[in-house]
Image (cartoon, rainbow, N blue to C red; front, side, top):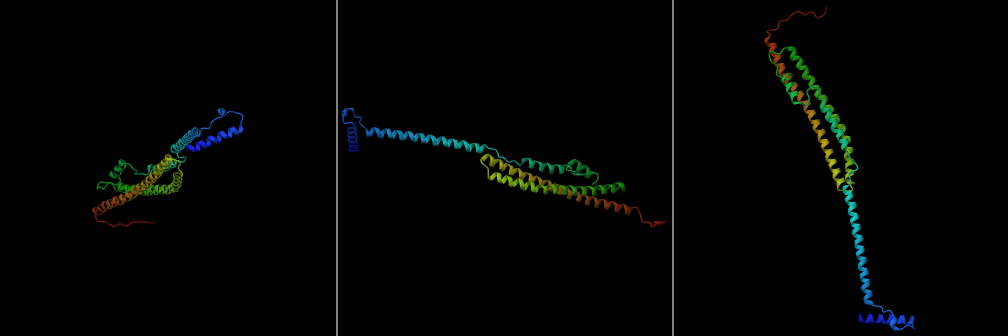
Amino acid sequence: MSRLRTLLTASFIAIVAAQAPGQAVAQLVVFDPNNYAQNLLTAARALQQINNQITSLQNEAQMLVNQAKNLASLPYSSLQQLEQSIQRTQQLLSQAQRIAYDVQQIDRAFSTTYAPASANMPDQTLTANAQTRWQNAVAGLQDAMRVQATVVGNLETNRTQMSALVTASQGAAGALQASQAGNQLLALQAQQIADLTAAVAAQGRAQNLEAAQRAAAQDQGREQLRRFLTRGRYQPTTVQMFH
């Protein structure tokens, strides 16, 4: 290295002397390779620090962009459609005819219309109660079919919402969008469970009304048979049906 430095110095002096032969050697600028290398190294280090700072700024900018994506809301929402579907089902349940989903109303009906037939109950009351029970059973079946029709009508809406939510979830730009899409899928599942619960409740109500009608009819039939047998032997009479 010392030899190379000496050669470089000598060459530089020779070049300068050849270009300005009239000047003294004392006036020549001496090239210091060691100082030049040190300056070059310092400049390289400064350039590396600048590059590191640029890279750091780029990383921070990308981090801010990612944070913005994670905080971005999902552009699609199915909550309004799901709420409308649940409201339609609830409205049908609230429109249940005659004996509805009310504990006090059910207790009153089973203490009167569906009560066991007593010996002191007039025949007209027995007949009226039987007619009322039949009407209740028919109304329960109609209500159950209306709820089932509504639930079936919601299937197409649910399919559309599920497809849109799955697409939005797969294309979510950040964590917030993915979380919101997942929450809406859970809301869709809750709405489907609500429809299923309503259909089961309506069907169960119809079946129970029909079963209660049969049980009351059997009890009333025994009472009417008892009255027929205790009224004495039947006496045939002449009846004129046509003039």
